[in-house]
Length: 102
Ligand SMILES: [Zn+2]
Ligand SMILES: [Zn+2]
Image (cartoon, rainbow, N blue to C red; front, side):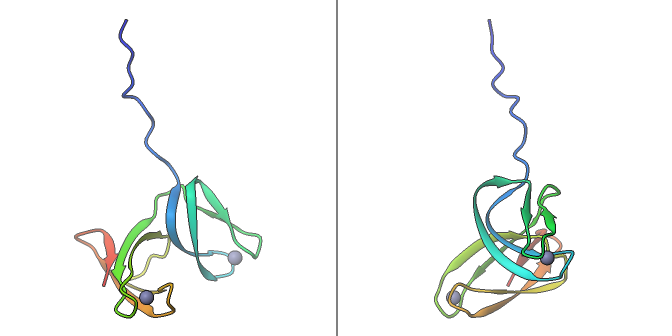
């Protein structure tokens, strides 16, 4: 008998470094998920859905040299993400690469 091990469902939700904007209160915050989650709660009590798939972003901080990769639910041509060291990094949406880059 042959077992089909290839029909795993695709990974849903999001994990890793996340930069999120709450659609309810508009607050932006960063978080890190060790396991995939379908949603995350904001402090205002709203639930932010991660189901739809998030946009990827990537930057290398000019201050501390950290190379960060994450995902965000913010949909704008330009976003600003603070590095761990506090340096704000401005990223632009690259519509060819479908991700935010410096
Ligand atoms: Zn909120
Ligand atoms: Zn930095």
